[in-house]
Length: 486
Image (cartoon, rainbow, N blue to C red):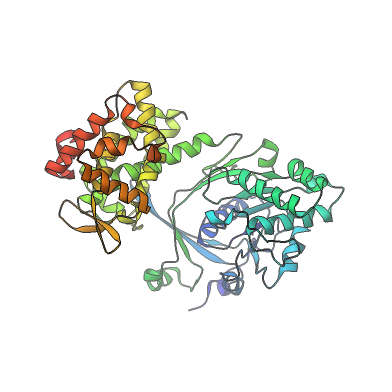
């Protein structure tokens, strides 16, 4: 069977290279490239994407072997119905490996066409690395590479302030653009690149904070043979993902107009402040996971889809999200409800096998970031406590009931199945000690290292959590939910 590049036209790959992308992995190919391909098709953009491999080993050679052409296979649940769609992406012009072709990357920085730089170098990628130099070819860290690229561009257009670029990091850290800019400026000062260059960074470039959301499941190795028969061609860059997509970009209006990917009704927002969207994602999407997965795991469920097919848990999650989380948020209710409905669809996507035990990693810190703010805000607004969120805190404490064995700690589910607790050693040892103390709820809630506050000071919270924990201990998770919420 022929390869995709042998039967497909490079429709947009020969357009001007206005976008430079640092990162060639599954996420960007199913997210940024898919968006650019879609907007190109509608005539809103007129750009190809020059891709740069950020580390020495990656997909660059495979991308070039397929002429940058590949398939995005979206599948999931949308409005309670199964949705599947395959779209060829042709907007990649070429891929550069800077460890072999560094001069090509510098040449791209000097291009008249360049307007946007997108990156995904993992959360660890936006970090300062001591020892990187401007003369390295290339520097090791992404911020150092970016500093070198931007200085090359600044030097190529010394009198042209409009040659600044829009920089869109999509690494999953808060204020990613702000943090990236700070590191770039640190390198600029360290490398003595001059005040004029730093002024150009401040005034002619935009380091946008961004928030992205799409589950990308990558190359479907187990299903590849069947999918190839469905497509009618080979594609070793095939990438699978869910239908849902969201991109929030924090930048001034004039920068949004340079990259108008929000003009076609895609779920993309340019805004001067994206904190409300970040709060929405953390509290609804991530919070719904955290408030439910430990309890579901303790009853014997293995995957998120198993949990969602259980009417008891599906109802518990829905009522927690709509009744206890949404009332605490600041975005318009219509937007919050629409987002929450999409979250429930996404949790019900049977194409994604997301293990509950994997999600349980570092659950204490996750609960602090994702669920505790909803408990405290609900209490402030309603002068009462959110019942299901309090139950989920009790379930978390029950999940951490454990015993040491072979330098690890293990808990037991309601059916006595053993599981490993995955968290920092100090967290697990504290939980083990708290259970041994005989006053576990008070010990856990008063741990200011966990919560940055003494939660026993929240009126009624300790008693509420203790009540639910006693129900769980006496009857098991399922019976406790049925008794209190069914």
